[in-house]
Amino acid sequence: MSEIAWRAFANSAITSTIATAISVAVGTLAAYGMLRFPKKHDGFALQLLSVRMFPPIAVVVPLVILFSALKLADTHLGLILAYAAFTLPFSTWMIRSFIEEVPTELEGVARIYRMSQFGAFVHIVLPLIRGGLLATALFVFISTGRNFSAL
Image (cartoon, rainbow, N blue to C red):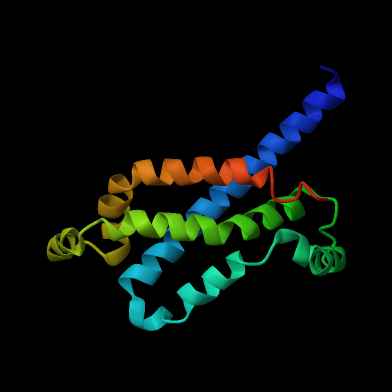
C-alpha cells in the first residue's frame, strides 16, 4: 500500500476510535441518567429514539452549513463530532439495556457505605456492564464507517 493509503487508513482509524469513545462515554452517562432518574427525563427517551429514525443523508445539508459556519468543515474534529452525534442514540439505547439488568439494590448498598451516586456508578455499575460496553463500542465502531458512505 502507498503512503497515501496508509495515511487515509490511519485517519479513519483515529477518527472512528475517538468518535466511538465519545459516543460510548456520553451514551453510558445518558442511559444511566434515564434509568436511575426517570422523573427528570420523561420525554428524553422518546426524543432520543425519534432522532434514530432520521436517515443520515437527510441532515447532511444542515450539517454542512453548520460545520462551515463553525469552521469545522473538512476537519478531523468535525468528522468526529458528526460520527459521535449519529451513533449516540444507538449507543445510549444499547447500553440502557445492559444497565437495566443491574439491580438497584447493589447501588443502595454502596450508598449505605457512604459512596456517592457517581461512586456507585463507577465502582458498581461500570464493572458489571463491562462486556456490554465492549459490545456497544464494537457495534458503534463498525457503524461509524457506514454513516457517511453516501457522501
